Image (cartoon, rainbow, N blue to C red):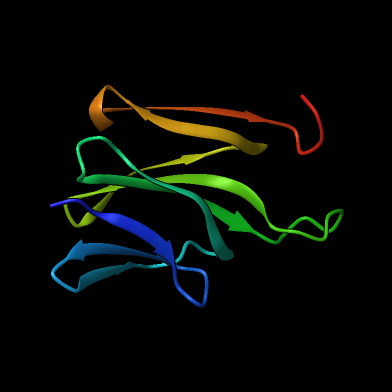
Length: 106
């Protein structure tokens, strides 16, 4: 069964499991949305960036956490004191790589 993830109207992540079934993942505190949602090659593992609107110096949401989900639960939450620039699955979904840095520039 291949899963996929999309944002709900209120900014939570919803995992489509197939057969018209889905699971809504509770929002992180302060979460306003998700971005860069991906499904790994294994078709079972998915992830997304959690978007926050808590920086007074910018008018748009920023990515402060990477969430990895598989088998009905969140496997890991990667935090950053900076923002996530990019991320991806490797080794069929058994590994994750990400790049973080300051909000403006490296």
